[in-house]
Image: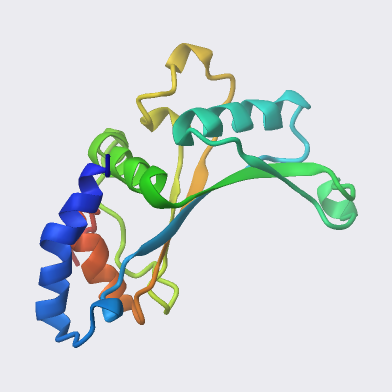
Length: 180
C-alpha cells in the first residue's frame, strides 16, 4: 500500500504545480528523489557514541545506517584516518514518504518555540537541507534511554529545476516554512 503523502502528491500537489508553473509535460513537475539523514558524531567522544547514534538513526528510519569514516589525519581535530565520524541513511520510495510524513506531522511540532524553517536554505537546484538540534523530538526515541543529545542534518533532494519550484513542492506537501 502506498504512503498517505504519496496519494496527496498525486491527487493534490501535481495538479496545483502544473497549473501554477504551466508545465506542458508531466515529467517537468518536481517530485521527491530521496531524503538523506546524517548524524555527525564528534571524533573525541567515547567509543559508544557512534553505536548509539547508529542505533537511534536505525530506529528513526527503519534502515541500517552506513558509518562515515574520516579520509585523512587532521591533528588539530585529533582525527585519525579511517576513524568513525558519523552515520547516514538514504531513504527512497515508500520509506521516504513515510519518514517525511512522520517528520512533518509528529516530530517538527515537538521542537520548542518552533516557528517554521527558513525558505532561504535551498541550494539553488531545488534541494533543501536543514538541521534538527535533538533526536528526542521523534516519538520513536525513548527519553529515558538517551545517553547524549545528538542532532542531525536532513536533506530533501527533489527534481525541481530551481528554488521556487522546490519551495512550492515542499509547501504543498505540508512542510512548515516560516513567513518572512
